[in-house]
Each structure stands twice: as C-alpha cells, then as structure tokens.
Image 1 (cartoon, rainbow, N blue to C red):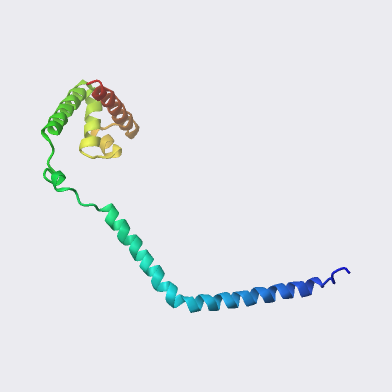
Image 2 (cartoon, rainbow, N blue to C red):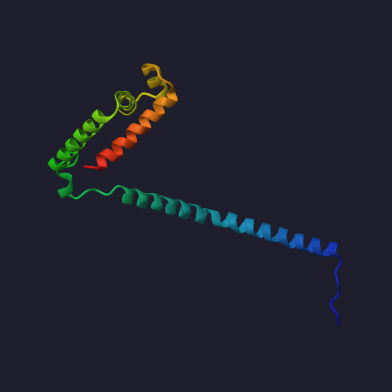
Length: 143
C-alpha cells in the first residue's frame, strides 16, 4: 500500500509547529542552564586572561637582570664604528642630498618643510632623500 500523501500546506504547518516547539524547548533549556553556564564561562574567561598575562610577562632570571638597560662595551664600540661610517658616507654625498637627508632623518622635517627651507620642489627633496638613503645603505654594507 502506498503512503498517503499530505497536502503541501499541511506539511509546512507541521514543520513550522515542530520548529516552534523545538525553539521553545531549547530556549527553556538554555534559560534553565544559564545560572550554571554563566559563572563557568566567566571563570573560563578569567583563567584564559590570567594565563595570557602570565605567559606574556615572564620575569627575567637574576643573572640577566644585572646589566639590564646598560649596553655592553662591544655594542658601544660597534655603534661608534657605524656612526663614523655613516658620517664618512654623508661626507661623500653631494651637499644638497646630504642636507636633505639630515633634515628629514635627523631633524624630522617633512619633505614639504625641507623643500620650503632649501627652496626646491618637494619631489626633488623626495628623490634626494631616497638617493641618499640608498647610497648610505650600500655604503654601510661595504664595511
């Protein structure tokens, strides 16, 4: 015997009725569980935050803290050597390029301010600073 066919409208009504019953049951279940779930979720969040804070800020061993913030002699000597090398490189640049580079990188002036100060277009300042930076990068690698 073939199964009896239901009209489409009755099928839709039955499906919506089951869906609504499920929604009401799930909402009641969630509401009943809320007093238990909320503290658990809050505690889990606190534990995650505490773990993250402990892992991100680890104390240094006492041996490493002794010279904290104080550069080593070798580091100081290397820095002085690099500065001298940069000074020598700047001396090899054309005067305008060196001046534009110094104003931009050391004095912190914008390209527009440098152009106004030196009386040259901003695009020229950009080219001079970029050219000086490229030259000094290759110059410092040559040591």
